[in-house]
Every structure is written in C-alpha cells, then in structure tokens.
Amino acid sequence: MASVQVAAVATFLVAIALVVTRVINSVVAALLGVVAMVLAGVMSDLQAFGFIDWNVIAILVSVWIIATYFGKTGIPEFLAAKVLAFSRGNVAVFVTLLGTLSGFISMFVDNVVVVLMMAPVLFHIARQFKFKTFGPLLFVGLCANFMGTALLLGDLPPQMLHSVSGIEFGGFVWHSGRPSSFIILTITYLIVVAIFYRRFRRQYAGRAEAAATADVGALPVSESTSEETESQPMDKRFGLLVCGAFAGTIVLMSLRHLTGYRLGFLALVGAVALMLMLEVLRKLWHLNVPSLEELLAELQWDAIFFYAALFALVGGLEHAGIIKAIADALVPYLHQSLLLGTTLLYWVTAPIVGIVEHDAYILTMLYVIRDLAATTQLNPWPLYWALLWAGTLGSNLTVAGAPALFVAVNMAEKEDGRKVDFKEFLGWSGPFVLSSLAICFVLAVVVWVLPFAK
Image 1 (tube, rainbow, N blue to C red):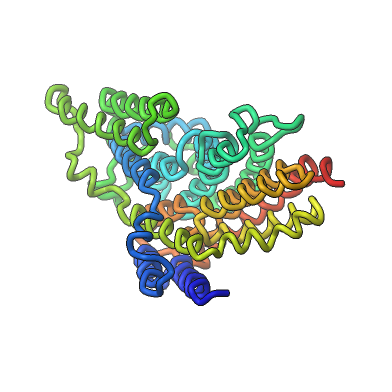
Image 2 (image 1 turned 90 degrees about the vertical axis):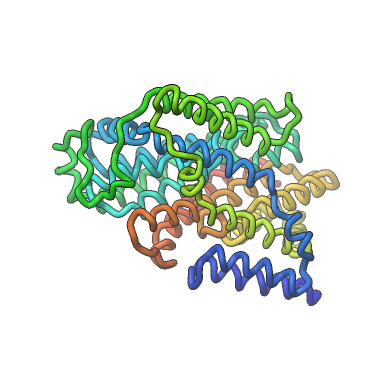
C-alpha cells in the first residue's frame, strides 16, 4: 500500500473513531480529519471542497428551512395528539407508530428531513409524560434511514442503481419475476419494528395506564417546559402555506428531468418562495411567523458542517484508491460462487458503511458489479440488491454512516439536556442493525441468490 493510502486510511480511522466515540465534538473531529488529510497530501484543499456534494447540501438546507417553519405551525402538536389518540394513549404504541410512519415516509422524503418533521411531534408527547427522548428519537432516525432504498425516490443509492442498470420505478417492487426491494425491505422492516415494540412496551410499562386515562386531545404542557418550547395552537393559514410549499417543492423536485435544473436548486426555489410568501403575508394576515433571523438560528448548522466533512473524508479515501482496492479484493470471490460472493459482499459492505458515508462506496461497487456481469455469465441482480440492502441497513450502526442519526442525537441531547455516550447509542443501533441485517440476508438468499446460483 502506498504511503498516501496509509495516510488516508490512518487519518480516516482516527477521525471516525473520534466521531463515533464523541471524545471531542463530532463536527470538530470530522473537520480535523479533513485538515489532516490535506496536510498529509492525500488531497489538496481544492479537491476537499470539490468532493463535497454541494447539491445535497443545498437540498438539506432548503428543506430544513421548510421543516423548521413546519415545527412552528402547531401542526406537530396536533399530529401528536392524533397519533396518541389512535394508539389509545399507550406510549409504547405511540413511539412504535411514529417510527413506523417515519420509515414509510422516507421512501419519498430525505431521511434527515423525516427526523426534523417527526422530532417536534415526539417532543410534544415526551414533555407531557416526562420521558427522555433519546431512545425514541433515535428509533425514528433508524426507521427513517431504513426504507430509503425501498423505492426509486427516497435516497441516492436507488437513483445510482437506476443510473447504472436502467431499472425503473416498478422494478423496485417486482423484478425478474420475483419480489424486489420494496417487498423485501418492508417484510424486514415490519419484523424489526415488532421486535422494538416489545422493547418499548417493557420500557414504558409504568406509563401506559396513566396515559390511557389522559385527555390526549388536550394535553397540558408540563410546568418544567420553558416558554420557548411551549405548545402553541395550530395556525391553519400558516400551516397551509408551509404544507403547500413543502408539497410543491417535492413535486418540483420530482419533475427535475423536465426542468433540467439540479435538485438542490429546485429545493432552494421552494424554500425561498415560502420565505417570500411569509414575509409578505405575515403583516397582511397577522401571522405569528418567526423572523428569518430566528429561523436560521434554529437550523442544525453543525449537521451541515458534519455532512460536508464526511463528503470530504470519503472523497479522500476514494481519491487515494482505497474504495477501489476493497472492490477489487472482492471480485475473485464473486467469480467463484454467487452464494459466496453475495455473502461476502453483503457482510463486508455492512460494517464498512457503518463508518463510511455509503454513497461513494455503493457507486463504486455498482460499477464493479456491472462490469463483472458484462464480461461473465453472472447475473448481477442478486449482487445489486445485496449491495443496496447491506449498504442501507449497515449505515445505521453509527452517526458516521448515517448523518440522520447525528441529527437525531443532537436534537435529543438538546431536548433532554444531557450528553449521550457511545455505549448508550450502540445499545440502540447495534440490535437494530444486527436484526435487520440478519432478517434481510435470509430473505435475499432465499429469494434472489439460491434461484440463480449454479
């Protein structure tokens, strides 16, 4: 291994170790890793900026602006009461339903945005029944990061698969005469959610009876809640404008092939249009709308820097040839046996994406699989699916693999007023990742590998 590759791997591993253990601030740790890679000659400063996907950053900032407005409309409190009423006041059922809903929404909406949408709903109920939000909100983040690969719209990996293989929307439901991503992941997801419902039922057993007798439609705010987090009545006109802007932005982004503009620009158009409407109508309609300064102060800017640093770190690894070297090492096993190759690809991918932002790795491996299938008689689809599913489910292991979890942890720590250590985090993410990977692997082998294995 060349010295630059050694420097890239060593720097990356140290930075990720600091990120996941949180010995120092995770954002500082990630940025230090970028600086160290530049100083070590792994990449130049200009390359580091170039590796950052500014299109994704623009999408996140724009949609987060809309989501922050959404949190001020009173709709989250209204939704919280409705979901709790549907769960008949059972906190365990409420948390499980909220997480389950988050996963299915993430098939169409970015997983970080789903966390931002659901957090105010969860916080409202947590304040009433006085329970810590870390576990439930992390569960929401884990669920939101689960189903993004189920369909073509939810996350970047399925869009990359479309680009590499030409698969269309329907192929994610049924492909090559058998169930594909949506069905396999949904079955896995529902089993994992059921497992965690048992955990929540034990955890909130003491609150179920009290919650069942509460007036869930008109819950009072606890005395310990500060003025900044007090419940507010739903402003229908404000809510209608925000929800309309969000729906319009999603539609606009879905029509990107007709406009020719990048998704980040289209998302920015939606956010700016909403800000303009609210600035014009706040006085005309006497809307209780936060000022732009207040809104921007509430955005998760640390998460933006964290995202940017991860893009640069993974870009440094890719530039040094590390990701390509991993792909090349797997190729002989893929030649040897479909079952062996798929198994290795799946279980090697899972831990890698637990510490590496998975998009660059998945894209590299997609091209390796495509080229391998073009020169052999190998059916690429069992490998494509194994790569995407392991790449999605394994990324839930740490905040380095799934920045949506970084956002969830930060928001929960701020709400709970405490720091979460790595052991507590792993106590939630570990069982979630292991159970989902094991269940999905069995389904993948039975449905996709054995029928095509020689």
